[in-house]
Image 1 (tube, rainbow, N blue to C red):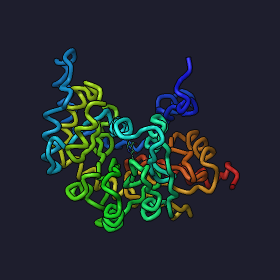
Image 2: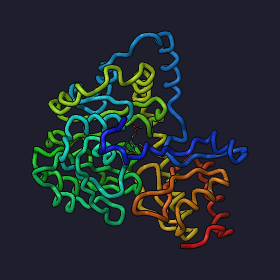
Image 3: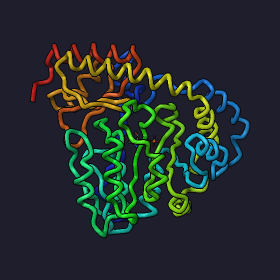
Length: 366
Ligand SMILES: Cc1ncc(COP(=O)(O)O)c(C=O)c1O
């Protein structure tokens, strides 16, 4: 049996290494994972109660349309319920958008170093990915605009961008959106939006009112701390959401995920605490990197892309042996690793491990 020719070369997604595997393989007592941009503070305690409350309904299918959660998210963002679609993570929303709108041969534009799933799903749909180089780790919106043709269907903007952590500003985004033909969809991936504290950051939800071709992606995996439950969403014009709904699996989000997301959304004090802690720890890490003579990109999410001036896989291995898992191998950044902003304790351990690595200089400099 042969798979479709356009997917035979595609690799399966490579997740960050699980802590348990590393502990077992290297015989380490403690391992910290700063590789998948998860929330080091877990989730709101209210989430656990909500999940326990759903245990009695384990044998009953969930509400496929997530009505209660949809209403709550709509109220939270000031949009209508028919503007929202849920997925098993924002990942699934990306897949559904690609499946709904990309035909073989269509063009779709994205940055050259950004979240891998935009290109991945474009390839599965046999669409043509047009990659536009980042400038200093930032989306080059004028260059992306210049690449739009009559074959372009979707432009993907990751803000903050994974892996560089940079943002496009409100003024830059508005200038871009005002020049995009209304027939071209712009997907604004705001998986890390709640972490951003820079006032120049755009309000994607406000822009939806003026740009019906805009779709905003959000997730409960990051600041809300529900990564294992798999729940994220897209917000767009009701006509766009209506178009996507038929490709959604009937029960794509679980009862546990829906109940947990509802409880998480209600605990905005937890979100605020995580945002503040992350900002403080992000600054502390950036200062520590600077002290160690390491350059990093201006980070706005809960992760930092830092230049170790050595092949990133070697840095990964060396830090792994010291019990710290980071993310190497980012396209265009062979000597950088992406490090999640952890708790104060985790960050102290990371910096100690980095300091030791730089001192030992076990890894030859490139
Ligand atoms: C930019 C970006 N978008 C989307 C996702 C997908 O998140 P999830 O599927 O967990 O909601 C991630 C996950 O790391 C991400 O970094």
